[in-house]
Length: 180
Image (cartoon, rainbow, N blue to C red; front, side, top):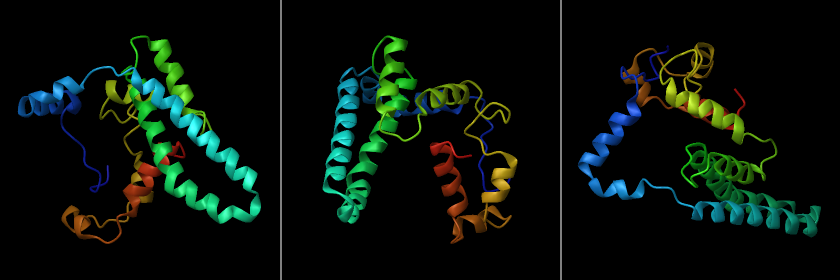
């Protein structure tokens, strides 16, 4: 793997990191619970995005500039909230039922042009069970992706000071959108 991508030597870094955080801040444990109100938030964000799309459509093509501003200023934040809801539903952190969590994930995914909640669920859970395994961890960059998107010099200390940080940023963006 290219030098600019960090690889942990730990088999499962998440549990160790969670234990360290809880040890340092025991009050965090009370935040690690299911939150059924997230289902209402999912419904609210879908209604909000659908309403905005409807009203922007009613304004007509002459207000394309306003559509861009609203999409960037409101839609991006609401869409990010939907992806957080999809992530929580993937980990069954909304309701007790796995089926209902899947339904909430699908609901939160409705405003997107292409559905991805269930594919995200499969690959994200695989990521947690096979962290660092090049064959199964979808969050790892493929060798060709690391090479194609890495604009860093071979020296990792120089990579930190580089003005060309777009490789990993593009990688993350395409991975979130399912493009790579």
